Image 1 (cartoon, rainbow, N blue to C red):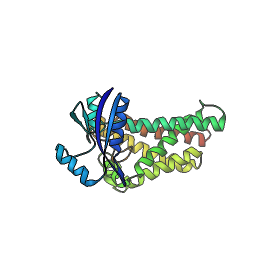
Image 2: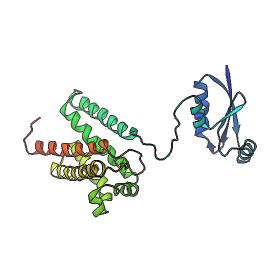
Image 3: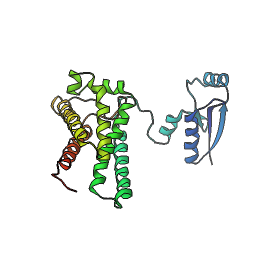
Image 4: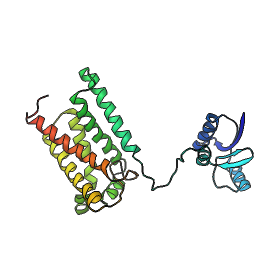
Length: 251
């Protein structure tokens, strides 16, 4: 069996998570792992000085130092987990939309006894709004700063960046409950329309390459079609719920 040595920090009050992930990765690759624990700060510092490294864990295969967790991943031809701050990713948006869709189907099955219903589609959109609002509300200041890069109303009234996620959450919650359309409909239409116009102007008119604040101020989701889709969902949901409230649609 192939052999590998790992040196990682294992102390009373700290166990290095990347050390655990390194051992797990090596074992899944068919290696017998000699797992060496660095049990004190002094022992860790001495190890770093001896091998001329700045971090742990460190992995050795056939006597050759491979490096840390990401270096081991690269050694096996896997993608690095830490690829830099500028690497774009749609994963947060995909995860949110997927969970919202599954929740919509689950609620439909529980409440109506069927999976594929009009209400399931409504809940998908309203729950997406709620989940996206939660992402923004984790750090409203960071969100509002990124939002200022492209939102036309926020650029004229800075406080709108702080109000937006609360409005999105309120509209999403009320639409999930099918309650108070007199509030949820105009809020959804207002923020959705301003957002759609702002994204379209920044991306398709000005041709700017920006990050989207749709999943919070620290995301690497690019501003573009996905961002526009979020706003179009809100506009569509506002029009749909408004039409239902007025009796134009009876389902």
